[in-house]
Length: 87
Image 1 (cartoon, rainbow, N blue to C red):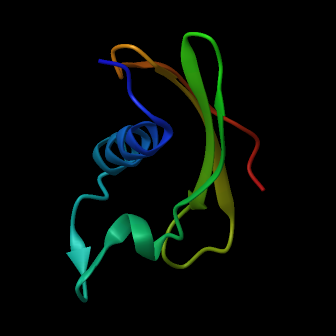
Image 2: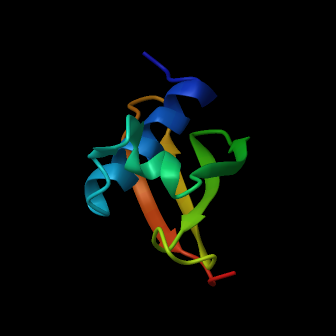
């Protein structure tokens, strides 16, 4: 069953939480939210979603790291992950 943009965002968020070790909560908020996780764009293509997002490098940094991810629209599988230039 094809996924929608909301599900693609959830897949990206879950991937970053697991790959960066951000699965814990601090003071009742998920760690990924404390790093200001933001989806900048979701572009539907024929077979996949292009998702661009960013989050701070760590709690004590203002430096943000941008990611580009491709999510298969049919299966919901993550097909590609690239870390873009740091902001």
